[in-house]
Length: 252
Image 1: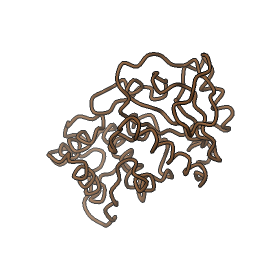
Image 2: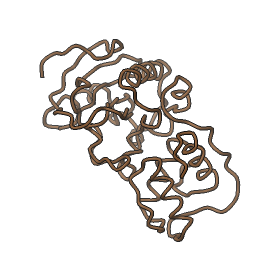
Image 3: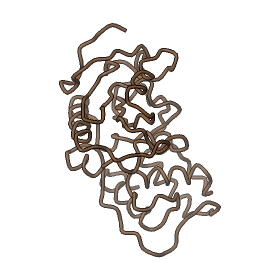
Image 4: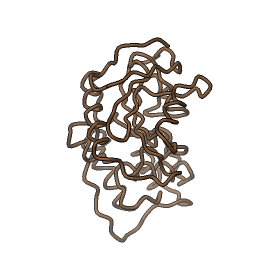
């Protein structure tokens, strides 16, 4: 791929990746990842390697340097098998940002302050130019809950929201009480599944707390209720989900 002009003034460098094709949908999701490799250099090489068949629009390095790999007008290959609000071609409708971090497989260190500052600024720029709704600023784990953990529970979603990007509500406090868990079934499980689906997760109201339900609840907790990530829907999880739906006007 030839050199191109960066879409964002925050991108200090262009490193063209050949791994892209044409969009089939307008970009209305901003999807955040971590690189999940032992070094940032290796991650960038892979994102630009035609044999790897993966890419993203941007990479934010540890100390805040922003690289653009694919023009925003094109479809980068970062989401994989995924879905949100019934759409399975997330690559076509999203802009992907890879945040340099080795991830859970390699110790999952904290994100650096300079890196989060850069990510926040880049996100603000993208959502403003593309008019991306707060509820459509997502984690890779949201659209692929059975496969992905990134960018993970250490990513400061509340801080992003305070900067005007993404959805967030103060999590309901954790307290003893009944909870829904794998193996449960019935109308309460169906209600939980329906609420998760209204938010956007790829789940049906089957009334059975199966492996998919556990994965989706875990993804929700990893994004919105990080104090306990166990895949069980306690009152804190359910109340936080209801508050999030209310804030987005999605309560039925």
